[in-house]
View 1 (tube, rainbow, N blue to C red):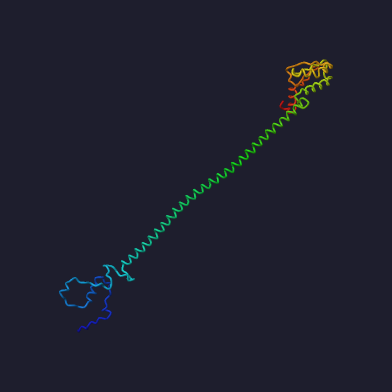
View 2 (cartoon, rainbow, N blue to C red):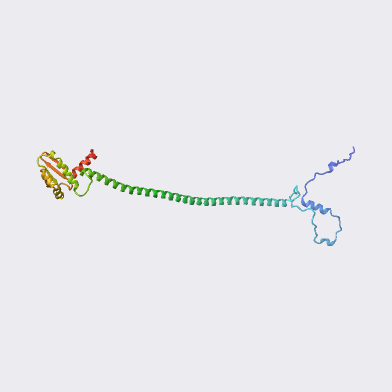
Length: 261
């Protein structure tokens, strides 16, 4: 039995490509150089030429875009730097906004307080002026009432005096003389010899003016200090008639306020 020669197919000659390290690729480049005879001068320090392709560190793989990982790290570093700058800018912007907001809020608060204070002072000034006018008007009204009340009281007093003495009050004694003449004319009311009593201050005037008339009608004139000046009192057998000012004033008050007297 003869062994038939084994023929490898073309597909079997192909080895599966594997990724090579940087040293392996460098060794292949050296082996690819043409053979030269050795010479003593070759012991000198060899001068290496710069390879066409950059050497990669052990375990470093070539990127799909043809850039080494160091270049990629630099790009990432730049990206990180840009992101850090953007983040720092954003943080600075936010911090600036917060500081600006706080400063603006404080400034606005102070301005608002100042404006409120000014408005309050203006309103208070207007209110104070208004109350001053009211007080002034009230004082003027009181002053007017004082004068009016005094005038009305005087009128009431004069009216009351007129009702008491029978005429407008004049300090000349004529009211008393008129009152006595009216009493003499009412002589039928008194029986016997009536007695007319007057204040000692009025005695001389009454005697001078009406003494003859009193004697003619049988009246007797007497001075009585208990009778106020301007008044008189008649006493007869059938009774007395009090025409003194005190009695007439009391009677006038009784007529004006009957429930109080």
